[in-house]
Length: 258
Image 1 (spheres, one colour):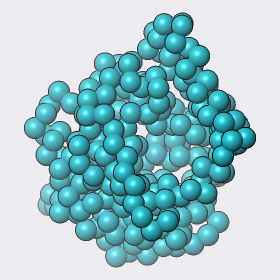
Image 2: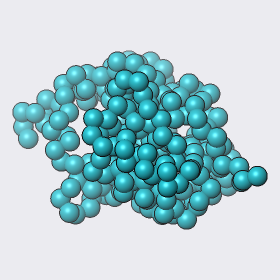
Image 3: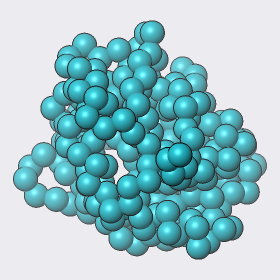
């Protein structure tokens, strides 16, 4: 019999034909090889699904799911979780690149620190200009940090599958078509789970400059709704509730001043 899968890597994909091959190749190149890669295509209208199917023929560890209709990332990731066999689950996005030691380092950390439920990392940021920026995250985030915004780089994290399933996985709702990760972190800290960010750059995070310009008012409102929901979940003092309007305020500042 084959070796039992230790790590399940999950990814949602939608119209990523230009980037998804390099994302998958970065997983194939990992120094730790005891993994399965579960990818859910969310009704792509380009060649993304065909690319995924070709990779799944080459490597049987790659499993491809398809949604019946476009259902957004939270739904796709929950579908992936249903098929995970590993004790540990790593996130990946279809336009990012994992450094080849990422899975190994995060797995070693979780196996050595049994009180930690989730581990993330810093990331290089690829804005499409040819030069990389950096994004650093707090080493030991707390529920006090999460009210100001996500304290993890979502596609950099690895978590214990049981911990995430115990809090219900990703929330699928009208407000989580954006910010499904922030919602998850609120649930994470509300349930007294523990996290850590390795202070190494284990991911190249794609954040094209034009992507920020495409963000909508409705997306910002959705983020603020998630913030209000999360503040209530964490029993945040009422005087801090105006912080939840930060996404909407930020939208208007960028729209009218930049």
